[in-house]
Image (cartoon, rainbow, N blue to C red; front, side, top):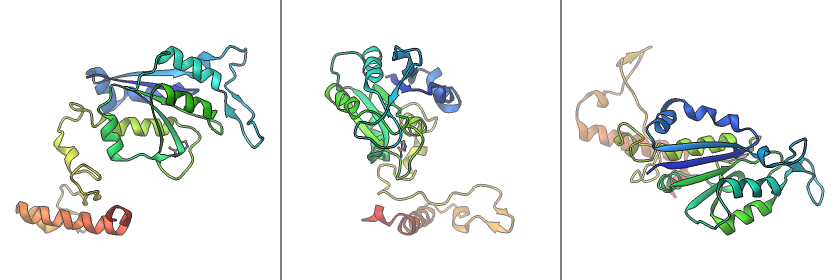
Length: 234
Ligand SMILES: NC(=S)c1ccno1
């Protein structure tokens, strides 16, 4: 399966980075197909206007619905198709999690809608919900200048889970939040040299005793999770 990824933004250049490193390799080996689009290509005035003042007053500008609707028509189509997943990165979205990334890694088409200014006219999201499967997702309780950086983060979290993407899929099994990890944070990692600036790799990790190593790692994960993310242990 090839996953098609579309990005709608007034700064499509943000997505040039997807040609680099592992994501670039995924494109080269046909796992993903990436298309970045300039929302202004669906405007018709000299200034290629995409925003206007908010109805009801308030600071800032709101993205007009018209360019989004015409871009949807051109990029996705005018027929409803729930197999198309449309993602709006937004601070007011539901928290994006590893399980959401896992679910999205199995779909064939994802369209990212990257808002700017104060946000997108809500009718755009309401319209999209009548046509496709919509996800309003938040990376965390903070505000970015737009959805592009969040779209890149979500892309990386999703694409790396596509079968065939990672050279060694086993490396996915023990990461933080991996399925079967009981929502535990990953244990501390070490490699050579065994001694570095007066600090040594924990002896148990050099013992070759797999049972003890597994026990140490689980205990470290439990301690780390309890200390940093008690919410995960509820
Ligand atoms: N926190 C997220 S996802 C966001 C998107 C735009 N601004 O913040």
